[in-house]
Length: 82
Image 1: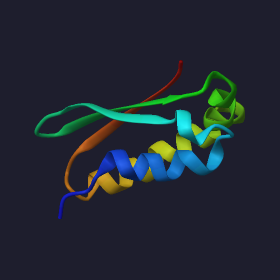
Image 2: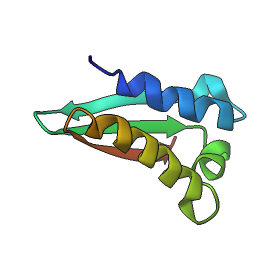
Image 3: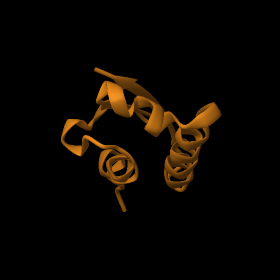
């Protein structure tokens, strides 16, 4: 069963932001055992997605990592603003 990691991460990020129309989630690369996903949000929403001391970002990464580990893959999520 293939998991759409872009959609998974987007579903976790969109409820957190004030500008949901500016959220972009892209899969930068995927190989046999590693997936790299980039999340771009509005500059005003960057703090909301990262959270205090990075707690929200770590929670998002933990959920995505748990999903990817079921398929014996590792996932890296880069969060940035534009």
